[in-house]
Length: 248
Picture (cartoon, rainbow, N blue to C red):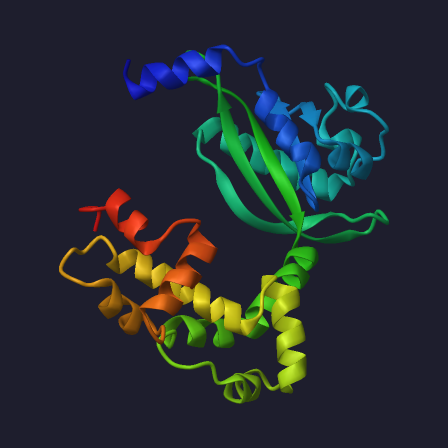
C-alpha cells in the first residue's frame, strides 16, 4: 500500500470535520469557516462569543455585514472574495477586528480556500489572533533571544552566568528567574540540552569516538556525557549511534 493510499484510507474512516475541534481549544485564536457566498458556516466558541452569540448554530448562514460595522464588514468581504476567486490564501493580514469590549483592535488574520472533492473552491476558513496578545506572548522570548543564541553558539564553553546577565541587562537572579519562566528550564540545563543536540548530530559518524564527541560538544568526559545524554534522550549514546548509524 502506498503512502497516499494509506493516508486516504485513514482519512475516509474519520468523521468529517473532526480536525477543526482543535480550534475549540487554542487559546487566543478565533476560527471561522464560510461558504462560496462568504456566509458563515462555522466558528469555534471564541469566535461565536466575540460575534455576540451564544452558540455556533446562531451564526450559520449570516454574513459579516450582519455582525460587524459596515467599514470592517466591507473589508472582510473583499478579502474573502479575493481568496474564493483566486483559490489562493491570504496570510498575515494585519487588520482591525472588534476586541472583547467591542472596540476595534489590531488582529492578525489568515484566510485559506476550501476545496470540494472536484477540486473547486467551496469556501474558505480562517483564524484571527490578537496582534497585541501575540506581541505580549512572544516578548519574553525576544528579550532573551541574545542569551539563548549565545548559549547555542557557545555550547562548548563553560556557563558564564554573570556575562549572560550583563548581556540581558539583568541581575543573575533576575536572569535565572526570567529564563526559567520563558523557557521552562534553567540556563545551565538549556546549555546541556544544546550539547546533547549537537552530540546527536555527530554520533552517526563512526569515525568519531564517544570521548571525542563528548569533548567536542563541551562535556568534561565520557562519563558526564553518557549520564546527561541518557537523561535527556532516554538512551545511551551507544544505543543512539546504533539506531542512527549512517543517517548523517
